[in-house]
Amino acid sequence: MEALIGLWLLMGFFWGLVAAMIGSPKGQTGTGFLIGLFFGPFGVLIMLFTTGSRRECPYCRELVKEAATVCPHCQREIGQAVPRQRKTSQAQLKSDLDKFRHK
Image (cartoon, rainbow, N blue to C red):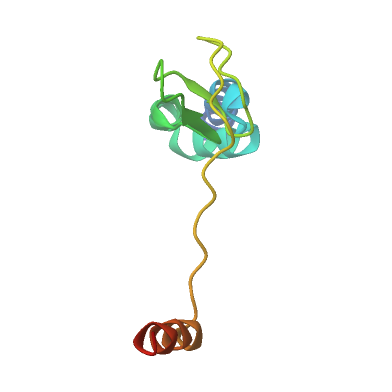
């Protein structure tokens, strides 16, 4: 019984390391280790299909780091990531609507 528990822990650690190595270039080393540790070979598959903190180049469709301004694959300038729009408050919407109505 103790040998079986030891083997289970060893295999979990192995799958965790494999998933961490896959997640490392994606910026998800710790997350990859935990997913591999708990889900075993399925965790490795999960890490294979995650993009991590990367985005797609609009020209060559390769994944590049989020902060990249030039694609390392096609060498084209891709600019900054499009910032997410902040939510507009309801009071701001009413104020803008009133300005529009009075014109």
